[in-house]
Image (tube, rainbow, N blue to C red; front, top):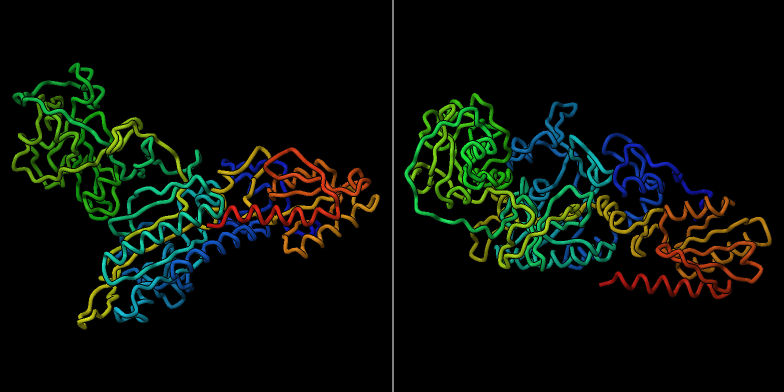
Length: 578
């Protein structure tokens, strides 16, 4: 490929809206161009990288018995109504009507579509297990797309779905899929990916893992133990908290004028935040049901844990009217003496297992001393569970060592879906006894564009990306300085031909730009190996060689260069095979 003919300009200035390293270099290097907020076109360099990532993904999916299919992006709403997600998923699902007023949607994921497909094609235990996958466009109507390809509205994803006769078979396959994901990320050059426990969210199922590329620009917060044996997303992370039980003291109401916050109450009563109980109110975003969360004052409520405990798909903060209607008083609330319409009360372990806390009296200007949940809420219908947000330094489960907090980009996820979709959509099989049973499902996703961006976040310098050989847009770049002088152009073209004859992917910079501009463009393209032919090197029948990751250079004889480079390419590619 000649650069003089290649579509896509390199940009000298950093685009104003590009805040992350990957967004900046993808724009500056001519890999992507915006069409609208969160929607991008891929230019040739970007498309070549994506194609190589997809090839690796296909190889690994085929390796675990996957069969490639392709499902449509535009789907009838009826499929999502069958599963119940059409109503439960929020505005990120783009809904519309076609010309016949039939409700439609743009798929952000394909569980419903694949379930409907498999129920028509598989009906016997003899056909199971089966896994199908696709690499397809998705659309998620993000309110705030950001960071280039890391959070977009339209994106390409590999999504795979497995179907099984029982949970044990799913679990065995889940391990194989997990191993395949680890190979995929190593093969594309993401050595910084951690597999962590995660919240299944709208996908359903009880067990799921996310694959996080560790990066400061990541949107997800993860907690890991120093030995890395414990790894979890903030949404579900737990810690080995110990709560001290004391002898319960008598409940006592005290005046706390104008003290509504934990800090104000603690200061007024001269106690620590850990000796208080904090009331936090939410509502089911769909039904309006009030959810009353009680947690120790030095902790924060984890909304994902709370939503899971309350069996609510989406929460919103409660308004004062709803709180008052339940008999609670904002700023002075507790589960004690509630009078009014029923609220769902969920108490964190920190509040339930601690003793003699200060809590609201449900009366303006008053709090109670010495609240003990087990004693004072006897007979009250409530749920006791972990709804606390883990903090950096909290004791890790098992080891007790301080948890470390990291930022990560979610590049992949896997879920044990169980029968969430097969039961609601009648995706059944006949077992050995001829009895109809719902198939057990798993699903497995990888964001292709996000993976490309994550590689840049992990592998770059001040001048541009440093692409691993496995996914680099080209393997070698040949730069001809002053190609019209001293036979430089002819020597460079001969070298390019020799390399291509050996099966090497070559980008030939034949433009005749000044050396500084040429090398700046080469850095933005991030091609692993570079050969420079110039009037200076041609006099000694040599080419200058360097790698993208190193500024040092050596010389090779022109008639030997192609063979040496082919060996280096093969050696580098071998590093990414597992």
